[in-house]
Amino acid sequence: MSGALTKGYWGVRLAALRALRRMIGLHRARVHFVWRVRQFDARGRLIGKSTGPNITHDEGEQFMAQVLFSQEASVPDNYYIGMDKRGTLTEGDTLADLVDEPEGSGYARQPVPSESGSWAIEDSTYIWGGWKAKSKEVTFTASGGTIPSCLHLFLCTVASGTSGVLLSSYTYPTNPIEPGGSYEATVEMLLR
Picture 1: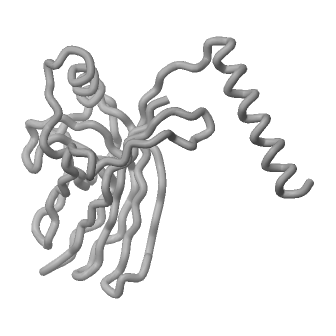
Picture 2: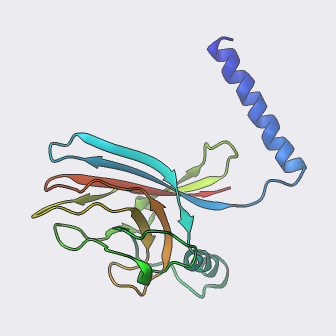
C-alpha cells in the first residue's frame, strides 16, 4: 500500500476503535505519567536516552484528588524532580523511602514552577486522545565531582527533606554523571 493509503487506512481504524470504546463504555478516565530523559557527557554528546512510564504513589493520588476536588491540599509554588536508588517501587512509597539520593557534586532537586510557562498543556496525540501537561526540561549538571548512578527519577512537592508528597517515580538506571556532564528530564501527565 502507498504511504497515503496506509495513513488513511490506520486513521480510519483508530477513529473506529475510539468510537467502539465509547459505545461499549471502555472510555474511562485515566491519569498516568511518562518520563523523557537524556544523558550527555562533558563534551555535550548524547550518551543515553529513554522514554517510559512510572508508578503513581498513593500520596500522589490523594494529593491530586485533594487539589482538584476538596481544596484540602493546594498547588505548591514549585514541583521538584529528583533522583534516587530505591530497589523496588511500591504504591505506598513516600519521600521517607528514598534511598541514596545524591548529595553534592552539583546535585539538587530541580524545580518546575507550577505556572503556565513551566508546563505545556495540550491535546494529546496518543492513540486514545485526551490531554497532557508536559513539564519544562530540567537539567542535573555535575560540578566539582561525579553524581553517582541512580535508578529512579521522582516528582515531589519539596526542595529537600522527607515531608512533601511523592507524586511519581520511574525506573531508569543512569550512568554516573561525570563533571561537566548532564542529565535532562521532563515529565508528562496524561489525562485520558
